[in-house]
Image (cartoon, rainbow, N blue to C red; front, side):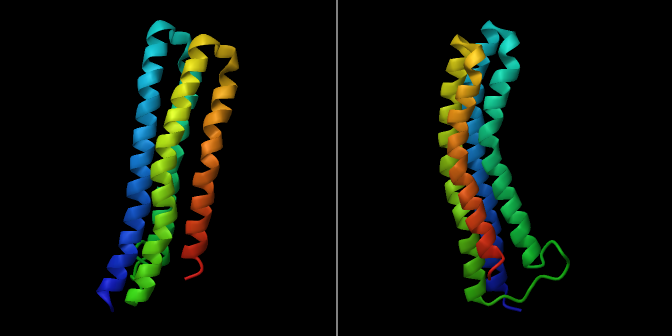
Length: 156
């Protein structure tokens, strides 16, 4: 068994989960900071700002899903790890990059958009759905990156 190939493939799972998770953590934190101010003034707006705060958390979930699929595909989660060449390991590493990199940046961008949506809730709570829609638009690119990562994983 070529341990370098397997190590590179595992690094692909790490890239997917780590960077997308960092993006989500940063994004959720940004919204939480904005939301805390609104809730301190009007606690009845908690559920509306919570929805906005949850949105940037999806990138981390997509990264985790990609990592689990990749680790399962190479046999690390299923029992016997696959014998991978360096070339195959590099392909799996590349498979983790789309959601890892896009998840990092889109999680932060979505957090900023959702934090701006918190401002909508603060002034006109009945218009909160507009803030959700604006933040959700960023999600499109994380979903596309997730799709690309999955397609790569299942076509190696």
